[in-house]
Amino acid sequence: MTTRGYLLFALIPVMIIGVGTLQSWNLALAILNMGLISAIMALGVNMQWGYAGLFNIGVMGFLALGGLAAVIVSMPPVGGAWAAGGLRVLLGLAFGAATIAGAVALYKRMAPGRKRALVLAVFVVIGFFVYRAIFDPAVQAIEGYNPATSGYLGGLGLPILFAWPVGALFAAGAAWLIAKTALGLRSDYLAIATLGISEIIIAMLKNEDWLSRGVKNVVGLPRPVPYEVDLQKSPGFVDFVTGYGMDPAEGSSIAVKLAYAALFLVVLAILIWLSEKALNSPWGRMMRAIRDNETAAEAMGKDVKRRHLQVFVLGSAVIGLAGAMMTTLDGQLTPASYQPLRFTFLIWVMVIVGGSGNNWGAVLGGFFIWFFWVEVEPMGRWAMDLLTSGLAEDSALRAHLLDSAAHMRLLTMGLILLLVLRFSPRGLIPER
Image (tube, rainbow, N blue to C red; front, side):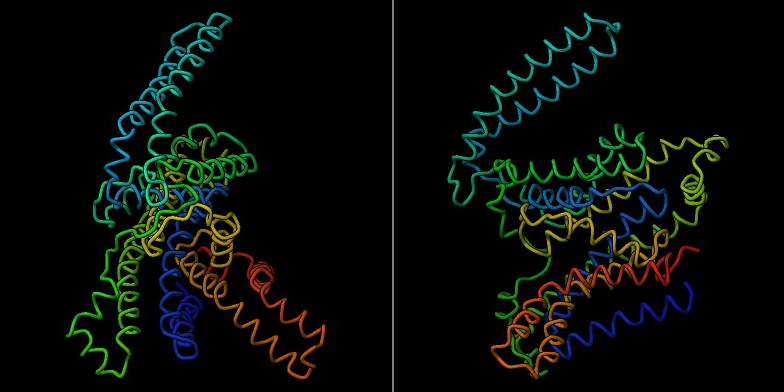
């Protein structure tokens, strides 16, 4: 990394300390934690775009699958819901999978022609109706069980840290299925396909209450760190924080955020180390060669589609891991909160601003963009207060300018992106 890169990274603690000093340390640590998770998200997208030139704008779908993994792994099972229809749901899903597998087998075994088309149509239609006959009543029974507080199957009741690798596996599995069908498409069609599939995933989470409670949300996920209330009940902790002149409630909140930051930092450090090893290996050089000229790489005997499949799955796995970590930090799964602006466009801005193709650039972009995403609105409000301080209280112009502070976030993101593309088109830390 160049001197410029070190100086830019040195700004991150300065900004965090500035927020802690001028606003609050709770907010500063909250920005730090989401900055670490955003850096991991940006790393995953950078693997796909920066390494291989794959244009994936379905990032939010893979993040949501990571969040779903946190629910399935960590939440306790709902015994009444399982008794009402749990086994029947599993049977219905198994029958649906068997129908798909049978249709694929028939397609491969039978000779092309009208007979194959007719047999496949009859087989799929019958299978679909049988599947729905098993699945729908079971779902209704599950969602009808105490819907105000549960109405879903719950999870496995395991420690939530186990959900992080499971989230990566969920996203990797979905990416493999998508890639097997969509990677042969041109880049713009691949982008459309990934966006459409991510919207399907979000729609599933919103509507399949038996799986994720839909828009009712799953709250109260277990934590991998202590609860603030437990820390406040500890005499040793109370004596420690009061010794520094800090309120126990504030001290416990800061301690919890620091514990999360330590966990996230360990994961980010491992990922950045592995990413650098991969990027500087013969595999990484081959991926960049494929990105720069697929035709030449194919002429040298490289299996371009297989390598694209590899890196698409790897990048999606990292995004899914970040999704599980984010849901762990939030303590809840809220499917309605997954929006393309926040969980796709913003991640792409992080990668472009930081430096596509450079792992350290993606990490830097994750921190910088998230910091400004959070801080621009209060900074804009302060600027508008200062700008309108000389105007009358009932001034229409003053009211308009103060109301416009809420829109500073989107304006600033666009402005940062334009400035970086104009003066440093390869990002703040360009690829070497």
